[in-house]
Length: 292
Image 1 (cartoon, rainbow, N blue to C red):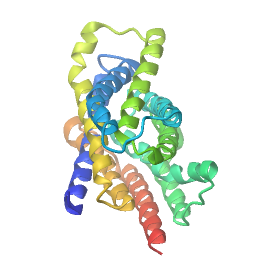
Image 2: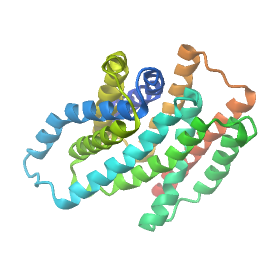
Image 3: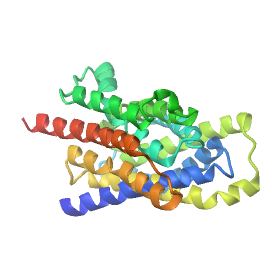
Image 4: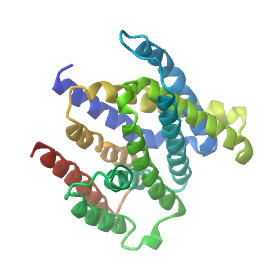
């Protein structure tokens, strides 16, 4: 794969992730958030299982250690919390707001890495924080009280998505990215099944009605895109990949505009633009620092 083809693959993944918010929201008309997450995780884990087994059978591959299992379970646990918050929030939050509020994880990640790994963040993080804070305020129409409960849950999920990035970084030394992702989704599904039985009532008719959404998010937005990301990162610098992948928020807003008729006023679009600027400032600033 050339670098250009890798960038195109990442752009394709960003488009799939952006459109996935549409399917995540529409599924809530038929089943609850936990049931959806359980099915999504199960579909993704089953789809990735053959690739994970092939990865483990390659020449020179070592058996999965206890450390690998520990970090994979930790990653799945954090992913489950983030997905639950986001999925519960999208029931009342707009797809547009969900996309931009979720993008805040990019700004939060350096602070978690600073606390956990003692990795001092790039100086670019400070203007990014200011831009994202002002952007979030404007996205709410200039008053945070204007955010719905769903918006607040999605914003909270950004913290756990950021934590998931840091946890996943701990899995890289094991060199089993597909196995890690497969185990992670299996853990996500297991947690969601347990909590779903206690907190939700799911019917077979609801599952059948939500089958297209489950298939899209489970196969395309989970299994396929994570595999594309794993492959593409071998040919595209991480900073460049991060900028391309962050375009998922733009695809989410465009899909919501054309398919759901969602609209933001000028103040809201200004806030969304500032959040995107914060993401780009952080990524570009980090990339320049790395080159120096």
